[in-house]
Every structure is written in structure tokens, then in C-alpha cells.
Length: 419
Ligand code: CTP
Image (cartoon, rainbow, N blue to C red; front, side, top):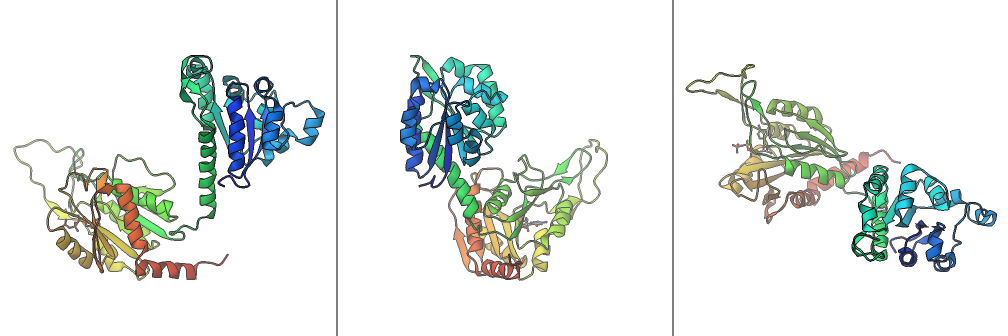
């Protein structure tokens, strides 16, 4: 009953697919929703309003100028009461009117008065569907956040073959169900990382050699970005500190872009105190050129670079860690993975280290998959080859199952201001 108590306003415009809209009414009602139907004059040429009225058990609105209808239904009231409006079938004509704000009948007027989400299931001949005028009008509706339920391909009522056949009623009802499912989940869910501030670092750093050259590594930033996104989905307040990557900044996540290890160090230190979970997925350059040449260095037979050590950001965080912080490091190893990772876990005072062998082709830097070991005080877990998104989920599941994280969460909740 995914549409339980949801009120749908179904606009039916004049196409042969009108008969399929009867099935949509049935589907919505079976899913627990109620339906009020508005029909255009041409829709009534295909199906009589009485059929929709019988199936929906609600009066059907057809004319703006019928005093009787207006007193019983009221087009503004219909729109105001709706949790969503669906126009199915939506002809090229109704799509054009909706795109341009023409309100010359009940359906188009109800649409303009509707502030609920609107779904549109087009149905028409394939030449009409392909016409730039129709596509431009659809693009306008998409720009205004309407949900287009795309027509399928096949034999059309006009006898030709192509795209334009209205999506099947079951499919349309599923789109509505999924939409309200997401809303309900979003409304109800207490998310596991609510009230938790997470700092994630991602990507490589760039250490300048001169005006045009730098030292860096192959990190794509994908693992760190996947972790930041996962934390956001789990309800955390996330700050992402990213080295230079080709990835687009994630939506809804505060992102600080840095280039060098020193810049990353400053940004992390300025934001780490407020964070309860810190995940250092960045591949920080261990060395930098102390004084990069501000000019382009001219070519010579040999060039020697003298490098100095960068501060170890993770170690500094480990040294300053409070009992209310959970610190996660990464270990990029090319040999003796478990041994070196365990050493880093201890030396940097971490709660968890995620280790990978960077010599494996399908894991580590610059690929979409990863194969990692999760190592903490309790031992190690060998994860299989997984997408970086799934690995991010597994890392967070692991963190959230630890006693330390539970105790941080408990302290957070105890200190949270009561509502
Ligand atoms: N790290 C850091 N600052 C550095 C170097 C590394 O914060 N200057 C962090 C990385 O973000 C990662 C972890 O330390 O979470 C381990 O990085 P890695 O490159 O595997 O190891 P290093 O500590 O640099 O040691 P080595 O290069 O000798 O393996």
C-alpha cells in the first residue's frame, strides 16, 4: 500500500491511450491512494466520464463553466488537495499548453493551480514525439521539475512503428509508488549518522616544482568522494577536503578544494576539532620542493630536486585525537600489506585502517573498484573486489558497529539539546 492516503489528481487528455488511464485509476486505488479525475473535452470523445467516475468513486471534472461541477468539485480545491498530479495520457497539445501556461480548460487550469509534484505520461504519434516543438516543450517542463514518464516504442494506434506509446499503467503506478516511497523514507527515517560531523579527505596533493610542473600521484579521489557521499546519505553533516581531481564537487556537501599537502594540512587542522569521525582517504605527497621556482625552470642536462618532508596530517590528528573522535586512515602498500598497515594503525593512533595493494590492477588508484583489508584492534577483514561505493558502505558499516563509535554516538545524544 505504497500510496496509502495519497490523493492523486489524474488529468486525462484526448488520446487513444485514454482507456489505459482507467487501469491507472485502478492501480492507484489498489495501492491505497485515492483519485480525482479531470478530463479534457477531447478525452471525453474516447471514454465517457461516467467510467472514470465509477472506477474512482469520485466526481469527474470536465467543464470550468458548469456551475454544478464547480460547486461540487472546485478546480482550485482539487489542485490544493492533491499530493501529486498525473497527466496521462498527455497529448502534444496538452504538453504545449502546460509548457506555455495556457489555462483554457479544467485540466490546464488545475495544473497551473497545482503546487504538488506533477508527473506527465506522454502519448502520441512518433513523428509528433520527434518534433522539435514537442521536445522543446518537454524540456521546459523538465526544467520546471516535472517528472516525465517516457513513452515506449512499438506499434502505435496510427499503425506506424516508433516512440510515442504511453508507458504501461503498471509502470506509471510504480513510478508514483517509488516517488512516495522515497518521500516516506526521507520523512520517517532516523538516519544512523544524524548529528555526527564527518571530515573526509580525498584525492592526491600537488607539490609545485616550478611555475608549470608539479609532483603528484595517481589518486582519482573516487574512494574519498564515495565515502563523503555515503556519509551524507547516512545523515551525517559532512565536510570534504579534496585535492585536485576530475570529479564534480558532490551536491549538498561542503567541499574545500586544496592543492598541496601544506594546504590540506591547514584545512584539516581548521576543521578537525568539530568532527567526530575523520576519514583520511587522500593520497598525500610525502615530500615537497621546499622553494619551488616561481619561473619555468630552463632545460639542462640534469636536474636535481631536493625534497623536504611534508607534515604527516594523519599522524598529527592521531596525536591530538580525543576520546570522542574516530580516526580512519588508509594505507597504500605495494608489499607486506597487513604488516605495514598494522604499523600505521599503531604509529598514527588510528581506530581503523583501510589497506590496499596498489599494484593490483582493479584496486586502488584511479579505478572504480577496490579490494581492501579493514584492520583495527580486533583483527582484519578481507573484503572482496567491490565498487568503491560498496566499499564505502562496508567501511561505514564497520565503523558504526564498533564500541567506540557507539560510545561517541551516546555522548552526542546525551549532550544534544532536547527538542
Ligand atoms: N597521510 C597523511 N599525511 C601525509 C602522508 C600520509 O595524512 N603526509 C595519510 C594518508 O592520507 C593515509 C595514511 O596517512 O590515510 C597513510 O598514507 P600512506 O601513503 O599509505 O603511508 P605513509 O604514512 O605516507 O607512509 P609510506 O609512504 O612510508 O608507506
